[in-house]
Structure formats: C-alpha cells, structure tokens
Length: 213
Image (cartoon, rainbow, N blue to C red; front, side):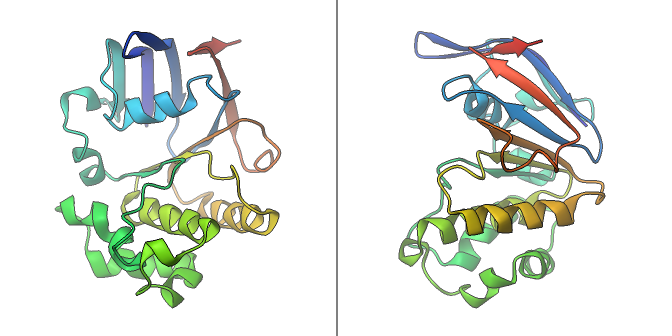
C-alpha cells in the first residue's frame, strides 16, 4: 500500500530524514516509533507533501505521491491527523471534519460524515460547536474524525496518544481496534508503545531520521 524509499528531507539547513525507508501493507496497522526529534513528524509531513523530498520516493499503490500537489492526497483516500490537530478555530466541528472532503471528487460528504458519527458518536453531539470552544481532548477527537472522513485507504496518525488523558487514550484505542480488519492501512507514530502494543501488526524504529535495525 505505502512504500517509502530512501527519503532524504531537509528543513532549512538541517537534514531531518537521512535515507529513511519503510512499507505499510494493505490492511496493516504499523507503528513508527522514535524519541522526540527522531523524524516521525517529518516522515508524516513528507508523505503528505508538506515537506519536499531532496531524494527518495513515496509510493501509494505504486503511484508516486511526490509528483502530486499536497491536497491531492485527500482524493486518493489518505487521511492525516497531525500532532497539533490543525483545526480551523472558527469553523464548526462538522465543517472541520469536512475540509478534506471538499477537495475530493469521489467521496460523498453526508455519507462520510455519517460514517464518522457512527465510529465517534460523541462528535455528532458537538457537530455545530466551533472548534475554538472545545477542550484539547475534544479537538483531538475532531482531528481523528477528519482523518477518518477521507481516509478510506490510508490513515496517518501523528502522536494520537500524546498529551491526552488516560480516558481519551482508551477511547482512541477503542476506535483503532474497530478499524482493524477493515482493509484500511494505518500508520501510527509515537514515542513509545504504552498505548498501542496490542494494536500494531509491526513497528519500525526511527532515530535521527534513519532506520534503526
């Protein structure tokens, strides 16, 4: 499903990825594990096209994503949950969830919203609330819902358990358990495996932007 081949990425004059490679199979739930600053977020942003590749390839079912505009990922069924949530404060919960759907030519907005509300019914109850009025934990769930709305083939979840209360960590784990076996590929980055050791099919360790054996 997803193949990363020898990624070299720079931010300003700093090299953040140094030949990093990994694959995520069809329907596989993969962990990307590393300490803070190891290159996990840079890997996610490179897949999404937010960071340009100096060298290497990002392939989705053999298609070279580096040749596409960043917003084209949504049309390919890639959902992304950034570590900082990335919500638009003045928009409602429902509007934030629908943002990537507005650039998709294949997904029906109401159908995908219904799916998100089925998986995360608590979001339906706050659908018309503006994002700026939500707690940090609630915003995390909205960011997850937005990724689920468009991520029909691949989900990229950057530190979904970071900085959240134990109850919310458990809730996110429950949602991810629901997704297993759904033919959906999932890449989860985190600094440790405390919250997801029972979820993952395999893990890849990254350190200083490179693979660790």
